[in-house]
Image (cartoon, rainbow, N blue to C red):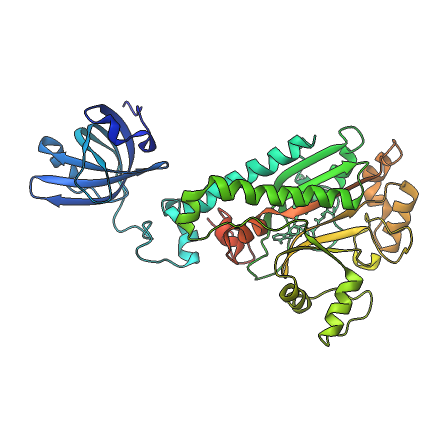
Length: 428
Ligand code: AMO
């Protein structure tokens, strides 16, 4: 069966009157009026009206909406108010029938809740709002890659099946690996640091895994992380890289996704920069002024972050966290070793990214592991690379799913993840 097409729907226009075109798509709407029928057909690029008359009418018998058709037709002027041209079908081929009724209404006339849409996720992609979210996600990924490659970062792929934890012991999914204990990577932390030895500036965009029993709009068991690591950069340098990535994402999508913004009903606004920088110590003061008293060294809980977020509603960096709250690989400050060269990027209360300068001295790293009750022996493979001329380096990891929720102004990562995994969802 020939399934080729000469045009995508976005290529068709009223100046092509009289021209024969061959295109395909799914039937969004179908109205029969006596001896003729009006079809609205969509492909991924657009929608057009098709007039069917004569012999082809018999093919429409029992044809449900959302079925896939291929049409050979002639472009002509249209009297319809929504279309300035239409296609008069010469031949119509039904390539795939859709069943009736479908589990969700992909036109979105009947609103389905998120669980029903996730259960029929592939069909949900015919909902233009959903499709636009994932078209935007693709633009965001392209923008991030463009910014990083311009800055001489090299894209890498690190293993997801690993023999020891990258972020310490908690929240690990374990699995049987030919009789040995293995884990799903929580982050590319150790590998990306190692790569600075020869590649200097690396990045990875990939799925990582956290066995957190969290039921929130911002936690997934499998999330997409954008990670960078760079030799000869301090934490403030990689904060600048992060800020330019975020600003570029907003600029590129604001300009190049007018249709998508219309479909999702949200206008993307470019954030002001530079982003505000608030130190942990300042944050404690600000909370103190709100009568929320915290001791130095206490972690900021969700409620504290919400209070800070009310004061700083957009993007801001929270910097210089106490060392005791940070993972073993983070470097202390020279002037005050109780503080770290580290940061989180917040959007209001929401943590989008965390990162910092890393320890690169093998002896310091070994003692830090012991201080944190981690066994240097299980980090042997990692530690040995630090004797091979490990440059000073810094980096960060950013949750792409969380960034997407900010970009499109919603508060559930499940909306921006194709097939989300959380403690209650393993299928489809
Ligand atoms: P961290 O654990 O803070 O740091 O993770 C970095 C960012 O990843 C996102 N994230 C998540 N998103 C959705 N669901 C989750 N369960 C989830 N867990 C984390 C967040 C978070 O800010 N190795 C360090 C980063 C570094 O220092 O380079 C790390 O993994 O947006």
